[in-house]
Each structure stands twice: as structure tokens, then as C-alpha cells.
Image (cartoon, rainbow, N blue to C red; front, side, top):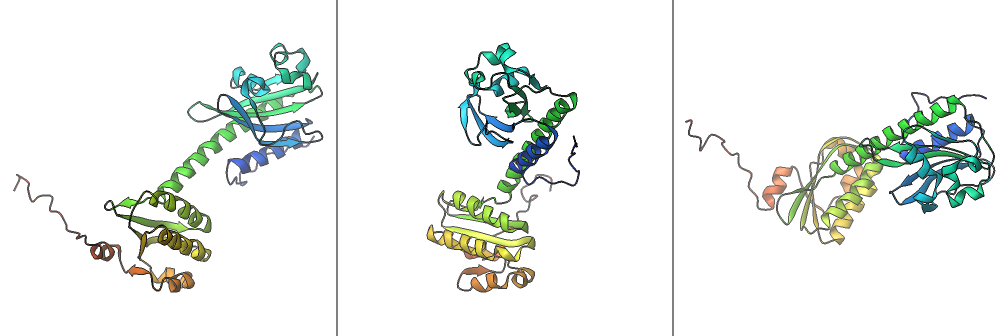
Amino acid sequence: MHHQTISPSRKFQNFNDAANQILNMLSKQMDINTLFIAENDGKTNTIKKAFNRHEELVVEDSQSPLDQTFCSLAINYGQEPLLIEDISKDDNAGKLEISAQFGNGAFIGIPIYYESGEVYGTICGLDKHPVSFTEEQQEMFEMMSSLLSYILELDKAQKEIQTLSSPLVPLSDEISILPIIGHITLERAYQLIEDVVMKASEGIDFLILDFSGITQIDPRIEEPLLDLIKALKIMGITPIITGILPTMAMNVPHFAHSLKGERMEATLKIAIEQLGFELTKKNEFANSRWK
């Protein structure tokens, strides 16, 4: 049988993408009917991704009580793959009602962990016929479990970065600033709308959108940014746009043109002063006793 390896250049977009590719790869290395990845919350087992070769033994998005699944046996077994080459002869599997559906079938499974040690779920294989699992296949399951754990942490970090990339900085109870920094992609622009609308709904009158920190911009972001401005106005929030640099005006000319009629200021400082705030430099030594 041909054994496929994961190329170092292969990139996973997120956990779901990685799950799909990993199951596809395992399916080419193992003569087993079903491979799946499940998530659980300690009580319910949810099938996140599934590959069925012939018979559909596992259905994506289906849920079952965790303690009535083979996955629970894999979790209780620990950090090594649980191998059941004949379900009908396994004492622990025999205690599960589901085992009657699989007769002398086979199961392999190993937990997927978060970095904290908490269990995310499992990656498993299942068949209605006996399967003899090789040592290499066991090692592959261990490797894929570790890889998925790593990708879970990357996903978590990416979500935290996205949250930090659209922070609303309160200037007062009525006024907040949104500093838009870095590379603005189409995906990030839509994420920006979702995050900002949710945060701004807490009740402000003015939102200053400062574009001066943008280093690179996707020309396709015109529409979502204009949608954001419209959404703010519908919510009763006055958007104030600052920091439109010449490079941005050239890269997204329609966006810059569409802002005519909107409240705009050249810099964040001017916008803040126009709202009645005065920026003064505090002399940290003014009240020092070390004069």
C-alpha cells in the first residue's frame, strides 16, 4: 500500500481544513470503512468530520451521549491509541449498546488534547469487519492526534489575534476609537464588521475609524468597509473617518470617493479635538520633588 506523508509545504487554513485533509490521507493508508473526528463537552459526542468508504457508519454533525460511544473508551484509555480488533470480544466495548451494531467489527481511537491537557475529542477509525492494525497505523494515529492538537492551538491564537485586531478604544462613554492597523484583507474586513458592530452596540454616539496604521490593503475591501459605515449609521452611531493616506486613496479610489459627505478629518488628533477634547502633554516632572 502506498504511504502518503504530509508535505512541510502543505498549509491548513484552519482546524476543519486540517481535519478534512488528515482523514483523506488516512483513508489512503488504511483499509477501514470509516474514519472520523469527534468533539465532546464531557457529556455529548459530536461528529465534526467523517469519511465513509462504503457504508455510512458515522454521520457528520450527529450527536450521541459520550458515555455510550467508542470515543469514550479511547478517552479513558489515555494518550495511546485504543485498538479493538474484534468488538464482540472486547469486554469494555461489550458494555455499550452501540456495540451490537458492529458485531465482530473493529475500532481504533485516540484523544485529541488542548495544550492545557483538556480533551477536545478524538480521532477514530471504525469498521463492521475485523481489522488488524499495524504498528505504523498506530503511530500515524498518534502523529495525527498531536498535529490536530497543535492546529487547535493555532486556531485559538488566530481568533485571539482577530479579536485584538479590531479593538474599540473608549475615549469617553459616548466616544470610541477604532485604530485599523496592518494588512487589511477581504476576510479581515468582514471580520471587522462583525466584531465592531457587536462591540459598538453597547452604546456609543461616535466612532472614530482611524486608517493611518494600514500598511497594505486589498482593493476588494471597499464594499465591506462601506457596509460597516452604513451599519454604524443605522445603529445611530456617527462614524468619523481619519487617516486616509494617499496610498489608500489610490488603491481603493471608489472607497475614498464614496466617503464624500461623511464626517472626515485628516488626523486622529484633529478628530478628537473637534469632539471637544484637548490633547495636552503632561510634564511628568512638574510635580516632582526632585526639582
